[in-house]
Image (tube, rainbow, N blue to C red; front, side, top):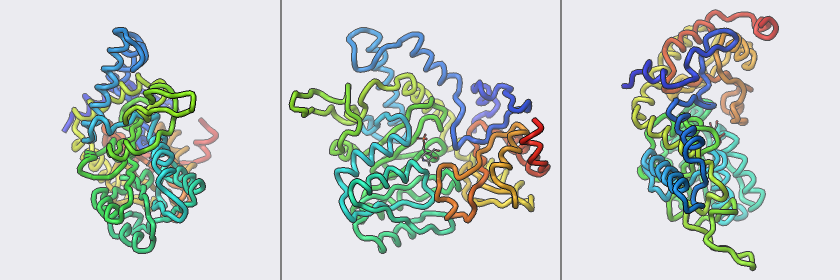
Length: 411
Ligand SMILES: Cc1ncc(COP(=O)(O)O)c(C=O)c1O
């Protein structure tokens, strides 16, 4: 296990920051995470020492940048156990999912084909598929949940009900209830029916070991900013044979070998053919540094830390009679709850007045009300630097309650 005090020292945002005049307790890590100094330094190194474009020049600085981008791709590939040419850099998880929708689905789905989702998916794993349905005549159907979870059994049932399923897209860990799915088991069922498995790893890749080859899913997506890396970079991991066949989405410089007055063009090989235009080089370098950092801490340790904090917080919250918890058994660093009779945003505003950052609402999963029967929740989410003391501070404020009007009017 890593030394959490040593780890926290590496994050400038954990250095005595205040919110509302109180010590900042940041419990919104499912939304985004803090960056360690070494990631910030890596980006600074780009801007202050090697600022130039990649794949474009014949001078030393460009070679240095090309090496950094290649190194980052290699680090990310090793981190999720994929081949280097299976890693496509995108602007984030959302762009990666859209890339699959437009690059793969437009060519491969047709009228009456089915895309299977769950009601607990994030907007980024719902709306691109609806757009594809509009464009192709395919339709979205939902896998029934069992106590808020997608399981191998519920996926099998969905396949019994639906013919023509061509693609299944699911979050490996949900961003409201934090339930993990059995990606490997579900992928097996999906493949038995000759469909494609898309895994939204936005909430799983930052928190647990991910082995793309072992999971055997066809596509995996995630965002850098939720795993200590900079904003504006994410990853699409795709099986090479699918990437090779898949159409490009963005067109422009860098992704083609040659184009002609006829309008035809010869695309570069995957993954480069998907990376049109100037890359977000400092963010990609920062992502490489972040995965090195996570690897050094150990993903098993990070996951264990999330589990311990989860158990600790649940034990405390269970003693609060007026608190309803929606995912007591998910153990993935996310707790969604409400105070009886209190609107979620009011609760989050009250906590803000005490220096505690949590999220309220539907967390971009805007069908989640159909799963939990509540219009919104307060969400606490931890990461590798969250301490038991921060959970204590949160639980104390939950136990103390307080007048919500104070939070709105008297600060
Ligand atoms: C499960 C899930 N999918 C997709 C996304 C979208 O990620 P991004 O906004 O970084 O593209 C998020 C972000 O919260 C998420 O939690």
